[in-house]
Image (cartoon, rainbow, N blue to C red; front, side, top):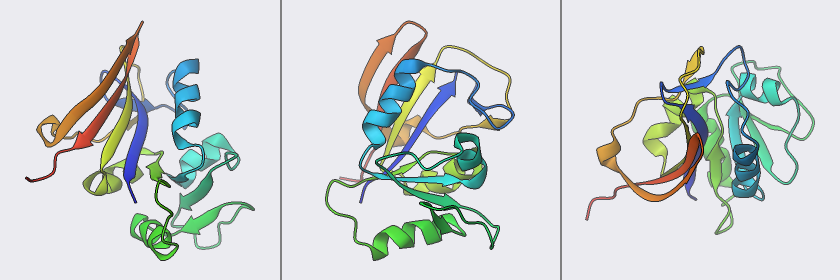
Length: 162
């Protein structure tokens, strides 16, 4: 299983404001769908609430501390470790990756496990209350960059010891 963090990140690290995205980039949303379709999405409850429904064509796992929280079509885990064990127990088929889709605390917890980062680096510094966790770029190799007007799609793979 490959663990991938996927996020649109402002130049100041902001990824959220008032439980919503600080920017709407149609191509970013299309890329999110293209990359995650057919895979597992793990997200926190607040992120799920901001979306409001399970996304079609993806297995959705919501991490929440609320023991009585449930939604039809959504699997519940009470910690990130539980979410990862859930996928381990199901022995994800080859090629079925696990995408972590936020929010800030889930990204922070998942970063040490991540094999890849799929980022949309946005050339804006919006105000916000949620940030992507800081990470050491020296631990990552940029394997793809697609620049556009005002943003770039960037793929970073974790460097492995040789």
